[in-house]
Image (tube, rainbow, N blue to C red; front, side):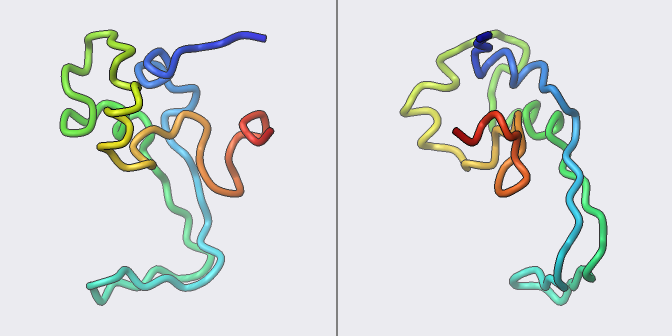
Length: 94
């Protein structure tokens, strides 16, 4: 089995975006925006992984970006190499 450090996958994600389809109408909290059932949404994984506010010093390969303390201080959804939720990569669900 191959192992790729999280920092490698952050810099070179397997997919640059994730595609999701809304199963129900969804109203964004605190706004009047409603997204209808069946709407396709694209989540920009590459853009999130290269957000300077989430991962400072983007071009530097630094495995410490994924130590326990650093991970605790950012959103769980800031690192999406295999998707998240019920549609995540099947190999991730052990």
